Length: 133
Image 1 (cartoon, rainbow, N blue to C red):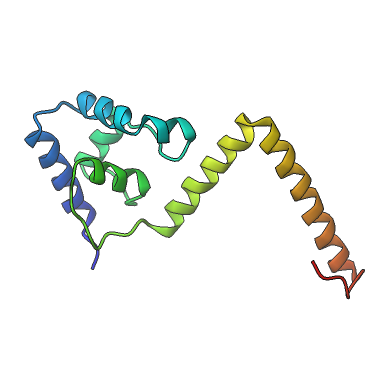
Image 2: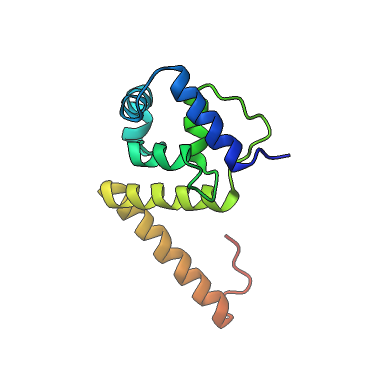
């Protein structure tokens, strides 16, 4: 059983209020706590607009950012799993960011991608049927 988004919104709002934090203070505390993960691209930084949307139940998918916010606020939602599509979207975004910011990673990825495209083209043409990778 998943917790409805409306309940998540209410729990986040209550947790922030209980800590007597403004949305900006919550963002600063979250971003400070997870600064290393944010810098590495593993976690996305929060801003007050995002938290405001969450507290107003103005979100459709409970993605990894919301789950991380719940973790930060010590909101226990044991049955809540991130939406697989949102996880994939987040991972693609992190991957794209890494490709854009790390030249050596970009070069390695480009070489691998070219190899795989070539391999796929050969297989589509029926070349090297016995070749095993």
